[in-house]
Length: 362
Ligand code: UD1
Image (cartoon, rainbow, N blue to C red; front, top):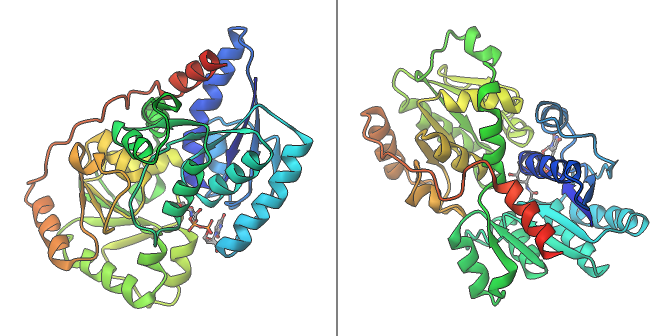
């Protein structure tokens, strides 16, 4: 069985690493499965791509389509044109896509139109917010997927409600958490820690990259001021995504307690998260990682496609509501935070379940 695996942007890399390892281990056991790794080049900076391959021991891609940045239409179209050529030249039995980035949707469409079955890992997540480009990517991908692997039971319910037959849906857990568990004893203190004499628990880690939060300078500044004013004695470590950096370059000096760094390699970033008093974020993956680690998380979004992180985990949604944010900051500062639990099957063995299922089905 030949599987082509797609990776395009930063959050994809943590999700494919354990899948590749599970395939290699099945090969070592003499099972008939091989993979071809296609990097679309959606993310190309070393700090958003290369460093993840090195640290997570992901083999070099067999091919990099080098599509780069552009508007959604340009980027999606470029990926489709180049992936179609690639797939015709290197046919396979399945195309496996993960997550919800433009590369996920673009490659799923190409595969399906070439009559190749699509596997979607992290299927069925829904924010029900069509202003989020990722929601459109999720819906389109799931509409043409043949085999669905889900992180929660609820994601499966969304798929069933959309008419997907139950036998195509497999609740297996979370491959991003596989990667976190596999690397917990390898996490590495980043330089910013010693530079600012930080200690575990005396800082917050913050990431912001959603267009709705970072594309308008006045909105981003208001957000940063509000967070800074509520941080008390805590420093705020802020690794900055290139999209956010563009807007920050239009702003003057930031409050003193916000410490800017470049995007960090995985092992350093997860060290920061694990040892933080809290995370403040608009990322999807960080809501899951903080839930696994039991670190309080304040999510600056109106909704989440990962409601289990709120219902079961350590996450609170604040949207852009200053009142809600103030309450969350007060709860955090007074130590009044809920004790979360780890969602079912987020146990480090998800990728093995995916590959076992695939081998059984074929
Ligand atoms: C993409 C994903 C988003 C994911 C995020 C993680 C989509 C629609 N969005 O958003 O779901 O949470 O990745 O980071 O797929 N840039 C660089 N270097 C790079 C890549 C991008 O400087 O290696 C800059 C470019 O100016 C680019 C901008 O970042 O225009 C945005 O990149 P893009 O891939 O379009 O979307 P992200 O915001 O990264």
